[in-house]
Image (cartoon, rainbow, N blue to C red; front, side, top):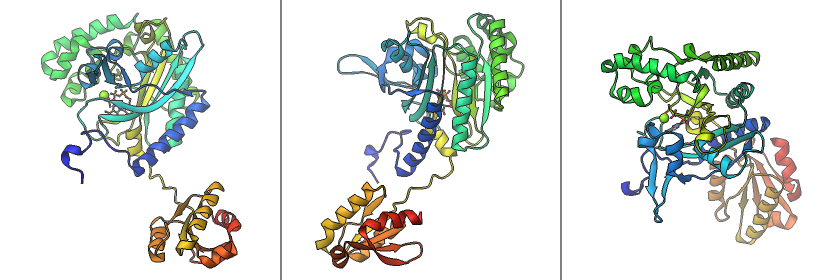
Length: 415
Ligand code: ATP
Ligand code: MG
């Protein structure tokens, strides 16, 4: 055990081999799926100017007001560990001068940081697979984004996920709706929780997705954005639904999806599971047509989503460890160099090989056994002289002398 003062920060976990194997499976499926939709990977900084998130996510959101790891560095710059990927992606899009380069389809994978209360499925350092598309106003692209998210999760084979969609309106229809909602909430303010009360003026739509049961019970008849969409938003939403139907992607309309951040408009969606308690959203996103101009760029429609790798990993079936094909047991110091060369050659030929380090035969066999290898190649003085190895099939116990050059074929024939 590490001394308490040296342990990792609460809510920040190590990725040990068993974890990373699962994460890599998620990343592999994501990379394969997203690439098929013509998305390109970008690698963006973990450190960003604090101002970027204040300007984009909004000062009154939870993320900016209490969850950011922000500090002043030795040079006096205000810097933070990115809490999410979209703002940085927009910054990179603008800074890279890509606004006239046609539709940009990007994805990224990496750690995000939020000083939240640690609990199951809620970490302070977690990883996201994020996707952003700049320059397309939808709704066709919205459908494709959702189809892509669906294909990705289907590729992972996670059962019982539900796609939920909503429309958040736009600057034409939202203000009037917002006023109506605020009036409705103010009438009930004394029956709502403290957080809801704080949000009534700052971010009233977020009150609708308050997780407190008593609040939910009070809000059953709250006005919904969907009933107040302007013609443009209404057509966009119905085209989105038609597209999903045409692709036979199951979904429900959830008028309570609001997304936490200020910059979303029109299409909003989440993919949820009922297996992770309150932390059931594994993937979430939406359209954010106003953000690029908010960050001083030209008006540019955009849509994106992010999936939480750790939450997905909790839902994944066991990912089998890739067992080594072969272990090399070297008997006697005089064969050590030769056995190392054999190991190198076999790896060159594509096998996964562990060298058991020479020394006592018993210890080496025990090691091979613990590694669950399929074959053991024993190399002693006689084998070396003959250019052969004694190959033992650990499944059958069968053992035979084979030419060094024939080992690969023998192993491959067995698998
Ligand atoms: P939640 O409602 O669960 O707090 P969110 O709306 O804050 O999620 P986003 O900012 O949209 O989440 O992030 C997208 C995804 O990233 C989430 O759906 C979730 O899978 C994952 N995620 C977000 N915050 C955390 C966290 N603290 N720990 C682990 N995963 C997270
Ligand atoms: Mg959150």
